[in-house]
Image (cartoon, rainbow, N blue to C red; front, top):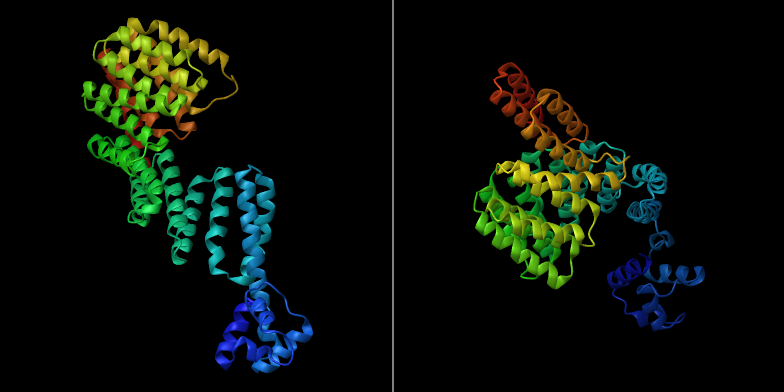
Length: 423
């Protein structure tokens, strides 16, 4: 700051560096001070101020600027603590920043301030409040012309809304995030992940055509093979399956398998193999599907990927009226669940347990309403409202087939209520 002010004052006075330095210091000394390479002594600074006709205070940083610089450093450190999962340390710094912010009103720090606030709120479980803070951060970054940072915050808000099941709002924010980076070739990765999230939103809303289009854009955004591109290809294969085009779904999944093998991405390969297995089941090629499933279960991938492989294939078998053939995969899934952390009640675990219950109900529909109510509440506790609605709808369908119209009606009424509350 001192160097910049010195240069501006010298130019306003119409002096060269040599003319300003004459009789006291060298021209190179003045140049070094202007570049911030040298801090002048009190005596030399007094001389420079007098030659330029400025008060000494003009060249000294004011309190606001010093505090603003301190605020930005503290917020950067708080963000680093959050990356390192040191939430308590970040919280302490954030509390100090609150008092500094009132004193400085530093516009360039507002984006960082709201972003740190959002991250802390998210970790405290107040996700909707965090979304508001992410959007404030995006607005502040946008005011500073920082499109990438603004897009990142808007994307993060959209992602959390998607996970909470607020699909229309998530879709709107994902489009807003995409708009900020769409015309910037250097931010193609940001564009790709926004296309992927938009595809996920459309897929969850049942619009598989639009979902497929955006997954294709995520896959092709830069012309390079990336993890996001392969994930988009796998998701696109799923869209073809949901449209009943299982041959094309298989083709896309096999293409993804080849890409993951070339890039040695084992977990993504497992995802692609699961997609291929489900496609083969629906094409009536169960033996080939089983061979791929064995490959996933025997691979060095996460236990979650192995459980998902069993879950998706056994559900595909049950939904294709081959529920009896799913028993071996149910046994394998139970074994994998027993080996996992019994204290971990994630929504993925609930999903695995629901898949087992669903197959059991298809074979022997006993206490359908009780099971459906129980699992719907478990999904709701993890804020997986869409899964909860699907459980209730499935239970109502079984009860209707049994002629128990009253219980079916109660389940459907609850499902409709959840959808209305979500809207």
